Image (tube, rainbow, N blue to C red; front, side, top):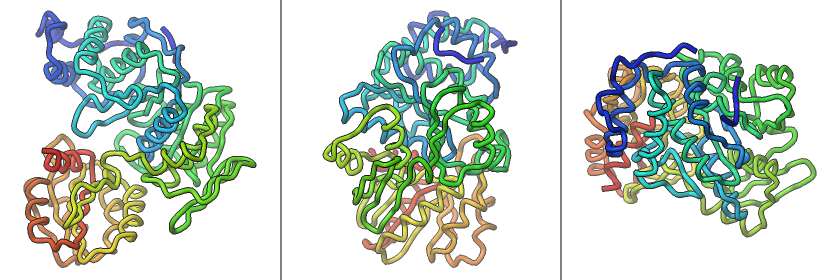
Length: 432
């Protein structure tokens, strides 16, 4: 079904002829075009993208391929593995999604984004190969990323799964190593509202005979079931490897190997533990100096990211209960005079479950709508915050932040969360 090299298609109704010379499109024109060639944002299935992949005649065999699936922790796990590989002198490519401010964030080669023209050239190759097969934005972007990664001939390619696993576009590639991070309920419309069902979808990246690092310390039973069915070898967090988190340090073990009193990383310790297990599986053993560089030097945009002081403003893309539970634990580490939340979410998320870990705080709630498809209105959020003294509607993230930071005390804490879109709007304000 899948491959490392190189059924019915949707016709695009002549949209390919809208701009006859694809090589003349600018980067921004390409991004607009990619959004126009399919009627759906999400269209599950691998037949269409696999057909185009075969036509591209590209190969990732020059690289060791690691596929990473999960609800939470994919981005931070990939980033730490990437950082660790570069510390060890390896070349590495990362494909991730979504981006926050710049589409080019989706493909990194040795930690760097590529020039817009490189993406344009990759888009043109995919456009030529697809013919009359319609691709979603994500499918087109994924194939273009594969073109760029194949050309880079890096030692390691880290491929982050976008949605699910079994039917995600990234799953047309057979990995050498698979990774499954934290499992929670998300994308209910597509994946269901049960961890067992979601776990089985995520486990779709497993392949017979390969090693799989499972970072969730309490994985759904369905992941064990798929591992048995596929006959792969799993390394489970809490069994083959694991961690103990202390107030100001942590310990990590992998088999008989123990690393003690490590500095706390800038990402969840659970994900850092998973990343270290992945590096071990890739044959990478970092020196103490290299490990300290990774744990203390690696940061990830939109994950507990401080963008302003006095008052302190922190951004986090948390948008499901597992992620907001972690955010709540981080908030407790801060000393602050008053707490302010700025939140905007998508309507198909578990909004009530996501807000629950944060409702225990005495805080002002500043609600914003998201002007994107599936964006939740403030009226959807407000009934879930009954009983809180201060709940205010705003028309945008920028308006909410302007008002909150102007009125806040210099010792206050402002948390912006709920969606990649919410955080992206905040970053636009602070990156001007």
